[in-house]
Length: 404
Ligand SMILES: Cc1cc2nc3c(=O)[nH]c(=O)nc-3n(C[C@H](O)[C@H](O)[C@H](O)COP(=O)(O)O)c2cc1C
Ligand SMILES: [Fe+2]
Ligand SMILES: [Fe+2]
Image 1 (cartoon, rainbow, N blue to C red):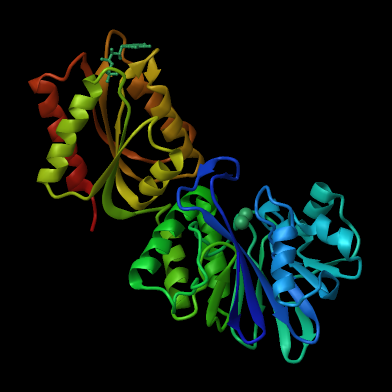
Image 2 (cartoon, rainbow, N blue to C red; image 1 turned 30 degrees about the vertical axis):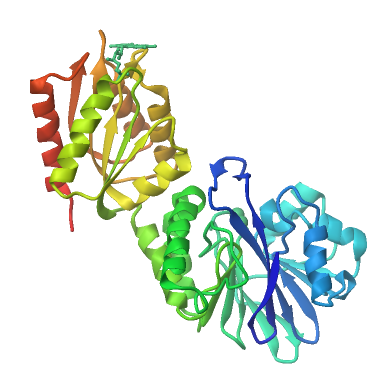
């Protein structure tokens, strides 16, 4: 838990959350921060209040206490997005104070009613509307729908150029009190950029085309500071995270980085031996790749890697006429997130009927992933010299297809 000053009249309250599955699903080995912002004019607004995950809102109230702000003194609750990691505390807030107004989009108002049966004191705002807090603090609102829910908006403080962007420009990774790009080393910033890839691919990726629209909209604002709901504040170089998001969004249509993600599974080592051979070839050719064994690797990690990679190698034995189930599960997740337009090859061992390749084809078709499946090698039992030769050819074809 920490409090810091972002810019004149804007304070950040952060709570780190660890040892949970984010959205009940994604592993977060480095934790995640939930960030609220307090904006003070004559009136006081809190933007995206947080209460931790399983915690009670006492954590947030303790932070407010440290700032000498009474819950009753908060005039406005700006709800950029109603996913409960940002809105779950409102009901507790309501038990303490009744004299406040919720500021949110039309969709968010509907969701507040659906999730919490909350319908009173709600003011719906539209794109460009302004909330005047007095003392020169005017907040304006930018609708950025489907980033990643239909309700999402960002809140902009004209005076300091601070964009409080909720999930947009967010990243995983617990934060310290030095949670500003101007206070962190390059190494620490790189850590958050990597955590942003993970966060983006897990949470936002499917909406990449809407992200590009949101970026164009935000580009019209004189942004000096990006203050997201997760991760660090970008104060020295806000464009760094904005452009990072643009790059990540563009990876959906491709081409992504000139890198390869090799995802594989193997029951008894037949496919794995061929994977070792493939890794050796990739090493020899100097290709940047990441190899993940399934089910040992969490899907969020595989997804983050595949999102950044132009090339995908799927290595799986046949299992009951289909792919090895954990590999199918990983491909299914890539399908759901629309990791589209990749160059790919597949190989793997079978015993009697084959079937893995057929299922891969079906999944790519079902999700309309438009992968260029350049080659495949299904071999019986252990890979013999001729199978390895075919795998070599497939890998060379893949490498040659990658663009700079
Ligand atoms: C539970 C199970 C189900 C299998 N189902 C099939 C199948 O439907 N068709 C087939 O050709 N081989 C099937 N096999 C055989 C494997 O594909 C074969 O043993 C392969 O060499 C395993 O490769 P691995 O050592 O990389 O796991 C199955 C094997 C197991 C253990
Ligand atoms: Fe969210
Ligand atoms: Fe969030």
